[in-house]
Structures are given as C-alpha cells and as structure tokens.
Image 1 (cartoon, rainbow, N blue to C red):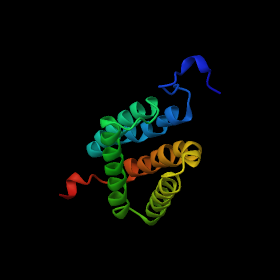
Image 2: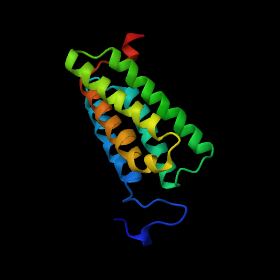
Image 3: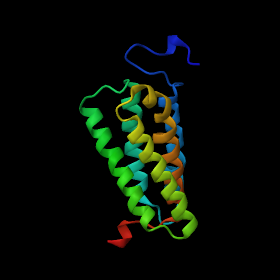
Image 4: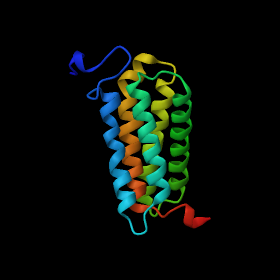
Length: 148
C-alpha cells in the first residue's frame, strides 16, 4: 500500500496502480525502437500516450485540456492497434491481438461510467493489456507508414 505522505489530495502517488502500471507500456517502445528499421509510428504514439496518461493519472484524472489531449492520443493508439491487428503477420499474432483489443474494449465499456469498477480495473485493462498488445505489434508487425 502506498504511504499516504507520498500523495496529496490532488496527486496520485507513484506507487498507485493507476500510475505505476504505465511501466507496462515501456517494453513496446523499447522493442519498436530497437527494430531495424525502427517502428517509429509506434515509438512516437505510445511514448506520447504514456507521458500524457501518466500526467493525467498523477493529477487524479482531472478533466482539463491535458485530459482531452490524453483521450485523443489514447484513442488514436487503440485505432492504430486495431489496424495493426488486421495486418497481423500470422494467425497466432492475430488471435492474441484480437484478445487484447477485446479485453481493452471490454474494460473501457465496463468502466466508462462506473467509478468503482474504473478504479479496480483501469490499470489492468487499459495499461497492462494494451502494453502486451503493443509489445506483440512491436515485435511482429511491419510499419504502417511503409504501407502508404
């Protein structure tokens, strides 16, 4: 449990699951950056989402301009994942990506207007599962920019 002295009424502590679960988003950034050539669109999009989401959660999800930017970026990352899922390189990757997309969407739908469910499930369903999903894409998929 987080020590109360580390958080304030307006800030979540670093050890709060809504904050530290952002660590699950970092492996995909590293995997995508290490590829030759790098999967730059995933590096940039996931990095932006990770930073904005971390700031939003640290501020206890205050709805403001930052929140609007974070929501747009997170939705864009989800849409990117859906498109990449369509282009999965094999059946196993496709099925894994579909399962992650479904779990993420189910979490979003189940917690959208339920604060108690949101607090309990958001970190897992909106940080950890998308982190696994994007790591799968970073490891196996080709750049969408190269398809244009």
